[in-house]
Image (cartoon, rainbow, N blue to C red):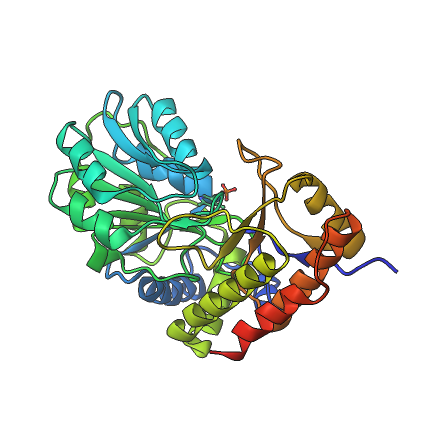
Amino acid sequence: MSAPYRLRLPGPTVVPERVRAALARPVLNHRGPEFAEILAETAGLLRKVAGTANEILLFACSGTGMMEASLANVLAPGDKALVIANGQFAERFATIAKALGGDADTIDVPWGQAVDKDSLAARLAGGDYRAVVAVHNESSTGAVADLAEIGAVVRATPALLVVDSVSGLGGIEMKQDAWGVDILLGASQKAFMCPPGLGLASVSDKAWKAIDQDAGRARFYWDFRRARDAAVKGQTAFTPAVSIAAGLREALRMIFEEGLPEVLARHRRLGEALRAGGQALGLPIFTKSPIISDTVAVFGVPDGLEGGAIVRHMYERYGTVIAGARNKLAGKVIRFGTMGYLDDADIVVDLLHLERTLADLGHPVTPGAGMTAAAERLRRQ
Ligand SMILES: *Cc1c(COP(=O)(O)O)cnc(C)c1O
């Protein structure tokens, strides 16, 4: 008998039965009243998750589509963005900015660490930047940006704060309006417990003032102005991911039935438990930032082992699908998603499979140490 398939990536994540049932319902007219109702409820609940009163814009795309959309709406050729570069997704933003004909300056921060607000303020004062770009939850390293602090720095300048919270929203706290995030972007396949294919953005008044100017920006599908005009009519500009929107509404209902604070606390508890368990098996936590992710656990790989071998063995022998790295950390880290539809038992089984994998690969482990450390944390709320 082959081991059951356990999807434990930092996205895509497990889709619960209730959401799969919603996804399986007949496709609706995307300009009809039934879909308008789905959009309205989904947008209302997304606003609560994001901590915003803004209109919510939905697109049919993966998270990277929303990264490009956000920059396409604020950068014209020659415009400069300042990217806080502390991981793979931040580097992708810099590449996108250049692909759009913009300029991307970076504040280079060692991977796994967070930017220091004084160096951000100094760099911002020294350049004419349209946007500061930050990744809320850097899935490649587990570093979480202190957006309250970054927002306070950027708010005092003409620059817009663009934030990727693709792997944060719904799993860790977001207060877009209070923190001064101008463009917030997310996607369906992380803590929102849906399949990939739906992207979302929420845009502040400060950002709309910039977006509403034409300024030679190359945008059509991604034009937020068109998306806003459709959103106020209960529609999307082009054919949306109708089924995923229905799934997302169901997922959001599940989140609010459990309670948003309770959902965030569960992510905290499970993230801490998995990190404690991995450490007890001898794996160091890679992340060094003051705030550590509760939606992705990133471990360093002990000497003598290779990350890819751990990932392969966990899947082939035990059916547990985790991630390594596809960047300069390749071989050096392993990553577990700790977001979405997860409970205590998932974490305990992750650690059982990790312990067995390490032992199978010849790494000494204390049997049960990981699960015991996790159980200790899981006993507390
Ligand atoms: C998953 C993810 C994305 C989006 O990646 P896609 O593969 O395009 O969906 C963007 N940013 C972060 C931080 C992510 O974790």
